[in-house]
Length: 196
Image 1: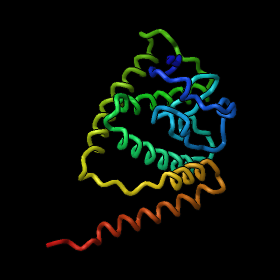
Image 2: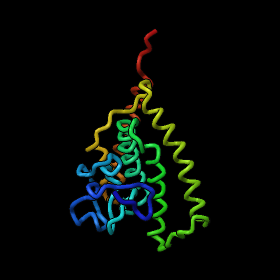
Image 3: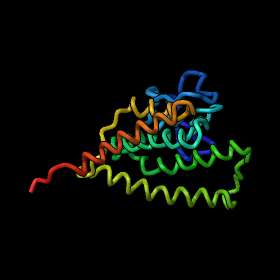
């Protein structure tokens, strides 16, 4: 086990994808079934220069595409959190992902994070981790509750949607299709006959 420099989680060398293509920015998201830890199997997690990135998603597709991709990845994350709700670390997952977003922005704008634990940056990081750990715990409890019904998740369909969002040419038609499907689900939930 080793610790990464940017995220407070130990990772097994076995979690690191074997292919060298994971060391470079990618244009397509995929699951990582070879990873030992459930979080590391998710399509938005990747490796760069031997370091795990908890948000390794290309900055393509524009706002509409980003919305579509983020929607699909959130549903995949929630299903994984539901399946792993009794595991030891899921309470920290959302914080690691939020740190991944911050580090992704730093990389985009060329900012080197300040390593001083008392710095303003690390103060913000601590605030984000504290905030998201509470949200993670609430999400875990809500997902354990059997009366909470989530729409059925088709991982491959969600992955397809996430990848469609990365392409500007497919994002608009995909988001219209997804919104239409959702409004149909909402309408069918509202129109269910009552059992009075």
